[in-house]
Length: 66
Image (cartoon, rainbow, N blue to C red; front, side):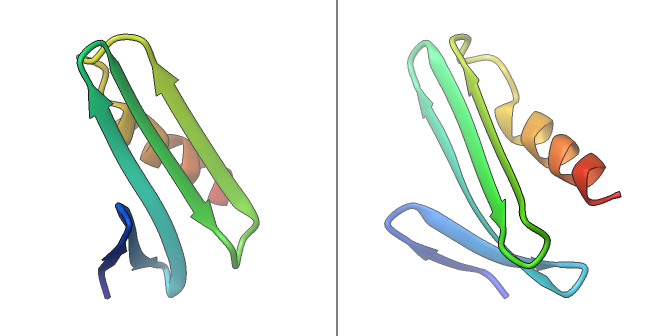
């Protein structure tokens, strides 16, 4: 399931809801993710717009779930 409200997205990961948002503006990149069922929250902020903040954030969230 995927959805979006005010730039927020949602999906299911391992049967749990995950809410996330990706952001980019010249010079900056960001990603935040909240997993209410596991208590995991991740925020990645970068002052380089070439940083893949989404990949970094999802990797960190995956490690936190383990």
